[in-house]
Length: 107
Image: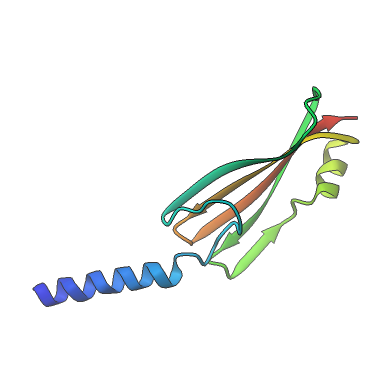
């Protein structure tokens, strides 16, 4: 019984270390099991009337999809003058990760 428990624990630890950062937002502080951060990148302090958010996603570090480019966000929201940019990251046990870009601005 002790031998089975030891090998099971060893397998879980090894798997966590091996697969732990497969899906990662790529920057900022990272937690081993869970990460959720918001990082302010740019801000002018001006008030804004519009806001837009877009995300890119990664599954197991094998598949990545999405468009969070500034050009895409500006065209989708009709923002011409960007007054604030924030990045939000989320990572869950290296299985799923995303990076969201949020912009605020005016026409």
